[in-house]
Length: 260
View 1 (cartoon, rainbow, N blue to C red):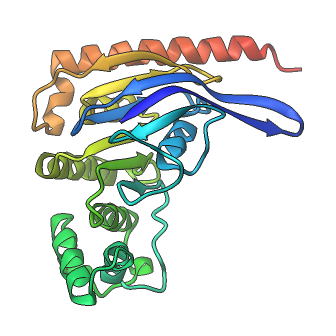
View 2: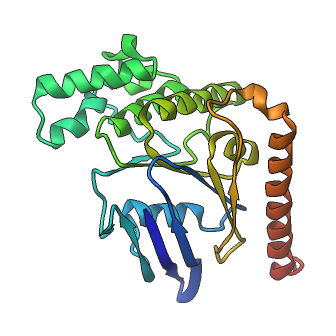
């Protein structure tokens, strides 16, 4: 995947708002990339450009050498809120993508059962989303995205609304799934520890307007468990990210000036 000179602007109340400014990034197949930065720095906006939901004002995004001009099945998306169909069972939610791709009911159901098993929800195929906890709903969302066998999995703060224990379990679940599928993953977060635990590379974004200011390679071994958070190298990487984010947040406050 290649992001080339991407800038994204919005007009808000007649005012020009630069959300992303001149972003350049190359991602190798199978890499896990975390976009990390202060709130409002354009992380989700850049993700939406990769997903094809937002058109760049300048520059372009390519996946497998093809320019992104809209959403496509080669890019699966998992949102912070699960966005499941409430009137469909869990299994039918996961089978929806394969059915839309032209697979038979039997084939789609088989794919759904496979991926529900991989996220530990085989027993819940006949349940409806409202009957599941938040963490279980997100696992269904991940299974639904993976059921299309995407080349790139895009995840926009998917664990942000979960409690700490469930979030930790979901992070480990994602690490395990990544080891199995080797899917390219772009993951948006504002949680530094989450980024260090999950990523191969952490791309730090500046405060608005969002620029890519640091590309940090996370040279921690795989597979990872949460025991690694006490390792000296983990702590060192976490501090490096924290210092960058603190500096950007301070700069943003100074630019805004004192409240009146």
